[in-house]
Image: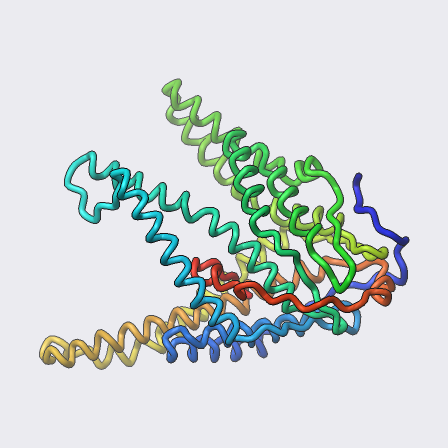
Length: 404
C-alpha cells in the first residue's frame, strides 16, 4: 500500500509546520553552554544539551502550538555514567575473548604479522561495538520522544531496541553483499520498524509506502557507484586516465547523490507516515536549499570562527614573544593556557556551526512539512510516562550526539 491505514478520514484543515528560531537568541545560549561545559570539564554539557533542546523544541510550531522538551540534565548525566560503566565492562570482556584466542592489539608493531594482528584486533573491536551503536541509536530516539510533549500529550516509543539491532545488522549485511544496491530496503524497513512503534498519546504512528519507492531518490547514488565500478574495470584494463576520470566523476556524483537521497528520502518517508485517527503529513524539502545552506553556513562559520580565533589567540601570541627566556614553570603555564584557548576556539566553532548550519537545515526540513487532518489530535488521550531508558547515555558514551 502507498499509505498507512488509518481509522478515520483526515479531519480539519492543513497546517504548516514552522521553525521560528533565530541566530541572535541561539548563539549566546550555545556559546554560554559551551563555555560552562569547558569550565566544568564537560560535566555541564548534559544540562546544556537539555537547555538547548528546550529552546529548539519550543521554536518548533504546528499552527499555534509548540513542542516541549521535558528531559533534564541530571537524568542524562546519570544515564551517561551508567553507560560508561557498562561499556567499559563490555569492551573489557571483548578484549579478553580476543586475547584468549591469540588476537591482541599491539601499540608498536615490529613485524608484518604484528601489523596484521593489530588490524584484525581493531576490525573485530569495531564489529563488537557496532551492535551497541545501533542499540544506542534506537534508545536515543526513544528517550527524545519520551521527553517530548505536544499540546500536553506525551510522545513515546516501545521497548524494542533488541529487535531493531537484529534487523539492522541483517539489513546491513544485505546492503554490503549487494554492494549498496539494497540500501533503500534497509532505510525503509528500519524507519518503518521505529515508526510503527512510535506513539502520540494513545495513538500509534504507521509507516506507509514501499521500499522500492525510495529508488527514485537513490538513482544518482547508483550512477555514482556504477562510475566507480567502471573505474575499477578500466584500471584492470590499464586505462589509467579513463579510470581516474571515471573514479573522480563517480565519487562526486555519488556524494551529491547521497545528499539528494537523504533529503528526498526524508520527504518520501514523512509523506507516507500517518497517525491513527486520520492525521497525515506532506513533506517537500529541496536538496538544493539544503546544499546551499551547508555551503553558506560553512563560509559564515569559517569567517566568524577565523576572526574569533585571531581575537582569542592574539594575546597568547604577544605573551609568548619571550618564551625562549622563560623558565620551565612559565612554559608549562603557556602550554596550559594554549590548550584552554584552543578548546575555547572549538567551543566558538561549535556554537557557530549550531547556529548557522544545524539550525537553518532543521528549519528548512521543518518548514517543508504540512500536517493534514490536524483535527484528529482532539481525540488523542494521554499515555503513561515512559521511564526514559538510559536517557541516551550510551549514545553519549559512544560519542553519537547530534546537534540537538
